[in-house]
Structures are given as C-alpha cells and as structure tokens.
Length: 290
Ligand code: PLP
Image (cartoon, rainbow, N blue to C red; front, side):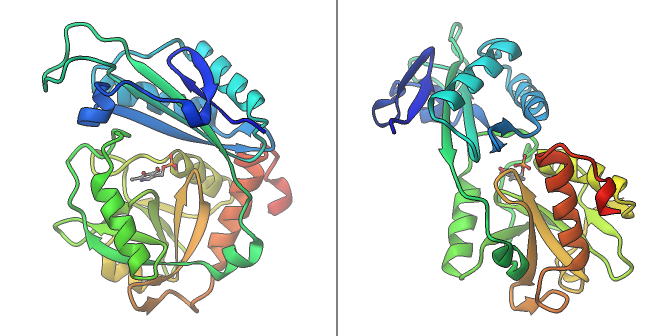
C-alpha cells in the first residue's frame, strides 16, 4: 500500500517527500513537533497535543501554519490515505525556508510536515516484564518545556541506554533529581503508595500522557504528589514507570543495576496503565476498574 506524507500543502508519496535544504528546521533545529498516538483509528488526546503545539510555537514566535480546524482536517486526511488504525501521527512545524542567518528572517512561511506510522500494541507479557533504565547527567538547555526538534542530547542518551542494554535513560539534574527520560516522563510509587512525578515547569516536557495520567490517577483514587525525586529515592521506590505517547504507561523494573520492587511490573503501575487505556485511549468509563 502506498504511504503518504503531507508536506507544505501536498500529500506526497512518503519515499519522495522532501523539504528545502534551507529550511530552518534542518539548519538550526528551529522548529517544534508533536507525536499523537492513534488507537482504533482515533487520535488520542488530539486537542491536548494541539494545545501544546500552539504553546511551543508561541514560545518560539513561530506562527501556526494553519488553523487548528485545518490541522485536524489534514491529520484526518493523511490517516485516511494511509489507512492508519494503530500507531502515530507525527507533525513538525519549522520557521520555514530562508537564507542561512541565525536571527529570524523578516518574512518566512512556517513549514508543516506530517507523517504517520502504523505500529502494533505491545504484548501484555512485555508490559508485565517491564523495562530497565540507566541514569545519565541531564546536559540539555533550560527550556525543556518546549517540544523542540533539537533532540541531540536525547538521542545521545537513548543510544547510551541502548548500548547498556536498557530501554531508556533517566536524566539527572545538578542537584541529583531525576528530570525525565530522553523521550518519556519519569514516575515512582513510594512504599506508602504515593504516586510521584516532577512538576511541569521549564525543566521537563509536560507530557500529554503525563497530564492525562494524573487525571486517571485522581479518578482511581491514587494519592498523587507533584515533586522532584532523587535517583536514590527512585532506586528505593516500590514501583517505577515511564509515560509517553508511544509507550503509554511502561513499568520500570530496573534502574542501573538496582531492581525495583520485586523486579516485575508493579501492581499500581499496571492499574494505572489499565485505567489510562480504558479512559483515555478507548474513551470508556473507569467504573469497571473500581
Ligand atoms: N519527555 C520528553 C523529553 C519527550 O520527548 C516526551 C515525548 O516525546 C515525553 C516526555 C512524553 O511526552 P508525551 O506524553 O506527550 O508523549
């Protein structure tokens, strides 16, 4: 089946889709992106992703490439052409094409690219086995709340995790607190069953999964604390997990060489994952989980 990409007004065969060599996204990473999960042909939390896209763009003083309504129409059309049922919609907006110069061009038209990718949901056994993470220093800039395409430290960290046989790297700030994963938010559950994640300020990306999971936790009656936690606290936690649009809720069973809990996915973590899948991914009532 042919796969299409949307590039600045056109649906093009994915293989041939290309942007200009002087696009500022290519030259300066002067752009932002969103990854929106798709489940059963439906975009999950689409409006929250578009809210964050608008916010990231406004922080960088890049105009929206088109209205929110039009963005939704293009997303739906690309999904239809690609017959996307499960996977992701990727959208990227850059400041556009201009002769290379660090300062903003006087006139430029924001460039918009969208692609999709079909994926299979993970097997329950893989979720229950969980994943390992390693700890690395956080070497990023100080505006991690902006979902910028500038991801080099994140790529280096993910590669380091991969080479260490781990799934993700948790980045540690100068005070010893966990900021987040290279493409995920970081969470722990303390021995007294409190769910903890770092506040969303300039230090981390405010994950859309994070936002929706906090609501799910409240609905499930799980006690929630928004505060930073250290690597040492995480290693002694009852449970740990990561969240993102591509993982939803993924149990963490090992941090560096330390097993978390009994080395298997934690009970509350799995309850949160189920709750998230029911309420947010499938848009059903949480009542049956109580
Ligand atoms: N933190 C970082 C650094 C990320 O890159 C991502 C996702 O790409 C997340 C957290 C999770 O965000 P979301 O739940 O919106 O996918």
